[in-house]
Image 1 (cartoon, rainbow, N blue to C red):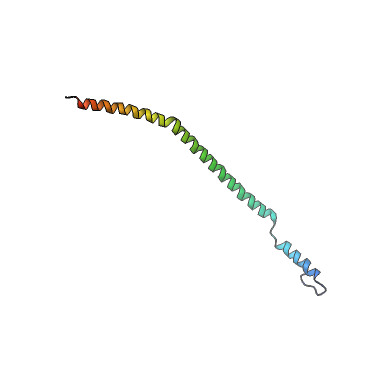
Image 2 (cartoon, rainbow, N blue to C red):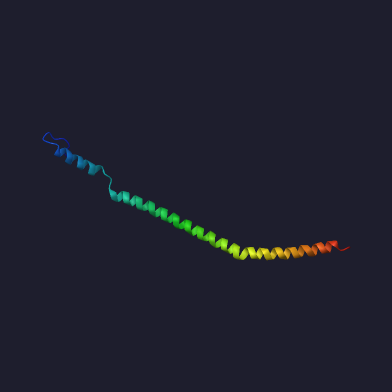
Length: 92
């Protein structure tokens, strides 16, 4: 590699180009790093979507099954409390 030549500027330019090529990182390595980062982000996004689907499913189950069941049990308990109150009022 010839950087300085008294005959003219062309060898200097050639030397500078060679040095630039030598110092420039290989694009494949950078592309691989970016690809790995994107893959990691996509994996996290997939996990997040799975988590939100699970939460949505659990919420639907609570709203459709558990809350109506609880309302039924509350109504039963109110009936039991009313019976207990009537029994307490009777002279014994």
